Image (cartoon, rainbow, N blue to C red; front, side):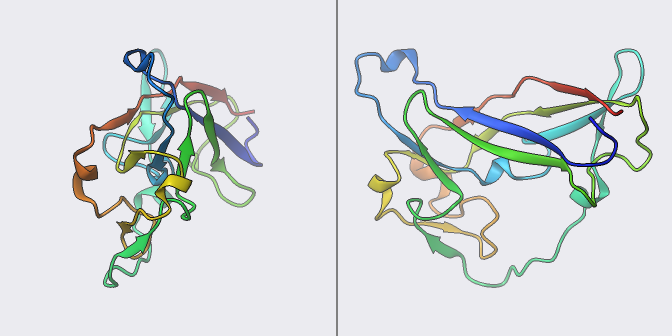
Length: 181
């Protein structure tokens, strides 16, 4: 990867039907995608690691990611429909949803300030437990209402505990390794 310029990573989530679903009609699923955009949480999400020699890889968190930004938090939660909100996606078994994660833009970077040619990095999605999902397509959820925090870029606030549905876990990805040139 170049030391300057854009570095994008394509993220692809594929819905694979379970073996125990054999003989059942294929059911679409709709889920909230916000956590795939979350920068860095203690256990989930994306991580950047810097090679420190031998087998040692150090987790790196950009100061831009770890700081808090400006948010209005005293407004009421917002009611949205998963069928119409951009942070909800529907997939049928075998289908995929893709997005881009930008590690570096033209005028900013998530890489350490002291990055130099030859430095090695790893980038990985460590998995996530989806905060809201349900069976059915976006169209089938036209009358479904969920609540997001007033700034919308957060976990679904209501229904709590996803209305008792089992947890939906998206597993960790393969590791992407790159060297700065």
